[in-house]
Length: 127
Image 1 (tube, rainbow, N blue to C red):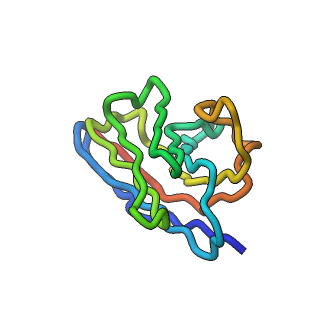
Image 2: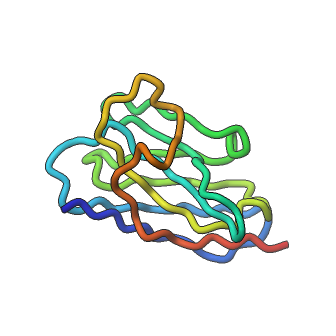
Image 3: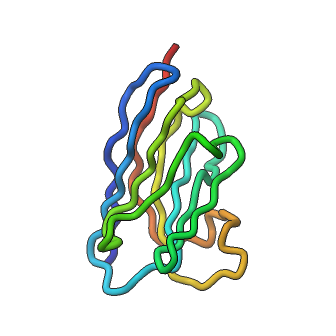
């Protein structure tokens, strides 16, 4: 059974930076892609960024492009999300997710495509 465990969430001031981690336990092979999603109070969960472990290619949603950076540890056991220039609108519960299926349009983030999820870590941005 594969488990994902996020950490690193915190309260931070607007303009600040934070790095989230997501550790994978129990995996016997490489995932096709791993991603970060987030869910703000009263809103639907939305994709943030995605990475393909086999070549390191990454993709970002427009609202975080240039501010957030997704990466993997060398052994692919830990996923990171480096967040900079944080804004009030970035306040949300952040989730990591893994997908083992090969997807031609790998940059499109749909919740239903990701079979394994972490429990989430809270990020709160204040002014």
